[in-house]
Amino acid sequence: MSSLAEVSSNQKAPFIVFEGLDGAGTTTQLELLQTWMERTYEQRVYVTREPSNGPIGSLLQLALCQRVQLDAVSLALLFAADRVDHIKSEMKEYLENGITVLCDRYYLSSFAYQLRDMPGGLAWIESINDKAIRPDLTLLIDVPADICMDRIQKSRWKMELFEEPEKLKTIRDNYLMLARHRQSVERIEVIDGNRDPQEVHKEVCDVVKEVLITEPRT
Ligand code: TYD
Image (cartoon, rainbow, N blue to C red; front, side, top):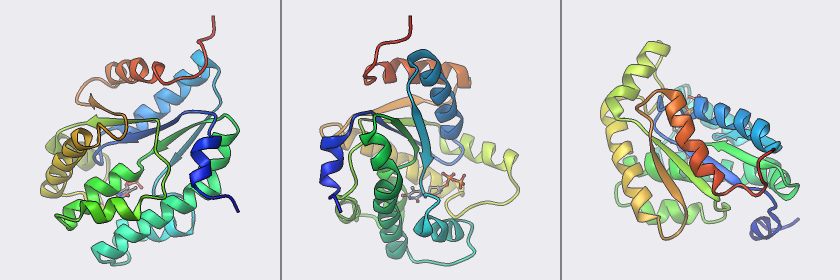
């Protein structure tokens, strides 16, 4: 079996991640970007998300909708394990075959969300995620917590584990701190998501153009 370290060296297509609070609109932006990349660049694009649809991801889904209770450390370990499984069983193959991967959430979610329940634990959370390949670009769709809460309440009647105003406020602060803190390690672009989705999409495209490998269709 090949090691994860080999993934990046064999990678032949960009790996792009969307991040943001619940309700920030990452899924909408990811879908708009997929359509734009396929049409404009004729790129083959694979869309995925974390938690994944694999066995560990399924257990995490149960924890998120609060059907099973897990402590903060177990949750952090499971998110990291799901990530390794997701890379090995899905994303690695696409990237090695020249297919762009767009992922809705990745390790920055673990850093921002799990840190909330273990202040001071960033180094440990980073260490359990150190087998995960680094994205070429992370787009952080930034929306204030109260606006996200409003959007969630209008679209659903049942709240998930982290969907409380105070929790989301801390997680947003964590995201913005991490975007600064990790600038020397990887490319993270903060995009104002509190705008019309098409305006947000336009800015997303401008940033993505810089990491795309192929020229646009003429
Ligand atoms: P979300 O992306 O909104 O998916 P769904 O459509 O299933 O609600 O929810 C995933 C939740 O999991 C979100 O609250 C963030 C949280 N999460 C973490 O806490 N750590 C992680 O590493 C990941 C990937 C997600």
